[in-house]
Structure formats: structure tokens, C-alpha cells
Length: 360
Image (cartoon, rainbow, N blue to C red; front, side, top):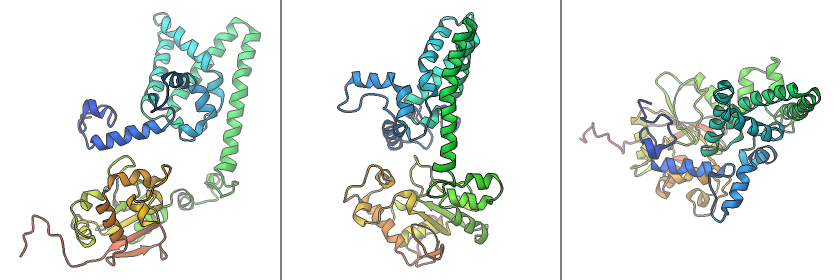
């Protein structure tokens, strides 16, 4: 908070300002949030009545149409109990003096849902709300049980049926869709959990950059430093790296802007202490076609490059094309590079002289 001046950084940037966030990043983040779920308001051409109907149907939509909420399954439990939970929340707020603990639970649930709605409508960010809703669902069943045994059993059955379905569906996903019994081998979690798969093998199956990260740990020294290009994940690198978050400005722009040639760009990076460049063109969504790279031919809105290229001018993209072809970048891993590879910067004739070093 002291560094950014914003207690909810990077949210509410237009109110608090500060930090490394700026207007361009704020606009991009808000555009991305509008793509998830139903958005925070009617989209162009959408009637307000239709949007209000979607708001009321959110429990149904998140359960039955998870693909529009970033594809994370939530199951039918909270949809089944949504009306009961809503009634319980309203009743608790009216009895805040008599039952302050229940009212606090209701307020936290409203805060969690409201924060989710106005920030990033992904089902995975509903997890805090799920925990609170589970506690409220249990309270509803207990209260119903006190009013009559048959009503209590009916409510318990209404809880257990969708909960059991959710647990079985989770097991199915872990074993087949995401597990080693799936068509592509999945994430092989049973073998790793049982100790039949090493940590390195497991991480290599989950993170496409991990083999390069291991290579850096074995071959690079303390004086070496890697700039990540097209890769926003900085964990599991046992060496000095510099990267940027998915929503942040690409780190390479700091040296890319102002460079007149690929050689000058590489000189700038060397001056900044970088000895290696790691490219993850697959994660970046870098197209094979040069026209698509420059935006001269349309890119699919589903592709990562559709969003990532917004940071770069055509001149800067051409510079990236040049350094990818530069003789001064020697591929060191893997032996046969494809779209994920580590390069070492080779010395060249200096074309960039820092301001602190006057020309002779």
C-alpha cells in the first residue's frame, strides 16, 4: 500500500492512481474483465432487461455454462441452494442485533459475490463465496431440521444429491479429463501422488518452460541473467530472471523502445546485465505468419497474440522479428529449437553507448 498508494492495487486505479499501473494497463484489464461472464453492464446492443435477467440467473449460468466463466466447473450444489441462501442472507440482515454472527456471514458473502462481479468473473474466484455459501447451506439444513424431521431429511437429501454429483464429477475430471487416464496423459497426478513420478517429471508435464528452467539451473552461473520473452511465469527458475505478469507491460519493451536495430537492442540488453533470452512463442501466441505477427491479417480473438500484440508498434514487432533471426542469438536449449527455447547473447560491435559512457 505504501509503494502503490492504492489499497486495492491494481483495482480502482482511476481513483487511487499510483504504482506501476497506468491508463493503458487499466483499460486492458477492464476490457479483459468484460470478456468474462456476463460483464458488469449491458454490452453494445444488449438490452438492460436482458442483462438484468442474466444477473438473476447467475447461479444457473455459473453451474450450467461454466465456459463463459473461464471454464471452471462448480457443480449444481450452489444453484440448487441459491434461493434458500438468498432468503437466509436477507433474513440474517434483518436480525442483525439478535444474530450478529449470522449477519456477519451474510455480509461477507455479499462482499465476496460483489467483488467477484465487479472485478473478474471467473468461477475460480468464487471459491471464498463457495466456502461461505457452504456454511450457510449447512445452517439452512439445521434450521429446517428443527422445524420437522421430514423437512430436515428432505433438505438433507437436496444437499447430498448435488454434492455427491459434484464429488463424482470432480473424481471423473481428475482421473480422465485432467488425469493420466485421459487421452493425452493429462497431468499424471496419481503417479506423482503415489511417488511413482518425480517432482521434475511432474513439473515438466505441467509447465512447458520447465525443461529450459532446469537447464538454466544446471548450466548458468551467478553472473548470468535471463530475460523472459513471451513467458509471464517466473516460478521454478533456479537462476536470475526478469519477466512481467500477464496483465503487465512486457519487460522487453523497456529496451525495445528507442532501439533502431536488432544489434542495438541486444547491446542495450547486455548493458542491462542480461546474458540470455528465453522465448516462449507458444505461450505468447506468436503466429507463424509474419503478416499475422504485424496485425496485417486478422488474428482470432481466442489467440494470446490477439491481446499481447497491443503493447507493440509495428516497428517494435519488426525488431522482434529481427532478433529472432539474429546471428548474435545462439540457441543453447533445446538442441532442436521449436517455439520454446533459450538463447545466449553473443558479443557484437557496440551500437548502443549508455549515456554515462561518452563516445571517444
